[in-house]
Image 1 (cartoon, rainbow, N blue to C red):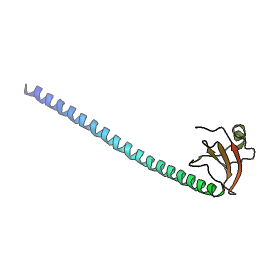
Image 2 (cartoon, rainbow, N blue to C red; image 1 turned 120 degrees about the vertical axis):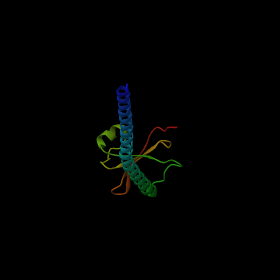
Image 3 (cartoon, rainbow, N blue to C red; image 1 turned 90 degrees about the vertical axis):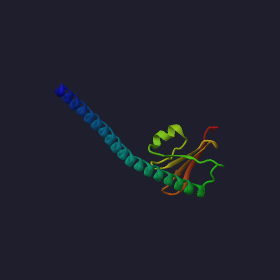
Amino acid sequence: MIIVKKKKIINFSIAIIFIIAIIFGILFYSKLSNLKFGTDNKKEKQRVENLLKEKNNLILKVSEIYNFPDAEEPVIATVSDPSSLINKLPFNNSKIGDKVLFFSKAGRVVLYRPEINKIIDIATVKKSD
């Protein structure tokens, strides 16, 4: 009888230790994942901050030579394939690296070349409300 009780106590103790080990393993994995994702979030945050700085600098430069439509901030894209741009917008002389500023409310699209700080072309498109 005493041997059976001791075996039950030992089995119960082993089960408790096993459960505690699993809980600590899950907590450790969770902390490790949070540290990893925290680092990725910092990199992502830095990337977004750099993009915002680049966007604000571009808007500042273009606004010195072009009057933006009232109370509208443009959506900006960089030309990576000029031939595909010809099919979508009436810009025949775009180059890789040019910036396209979309003013959807005003119905204007501006092609800007940063390397020479000049507006290359302006097009009118259908306005969106």
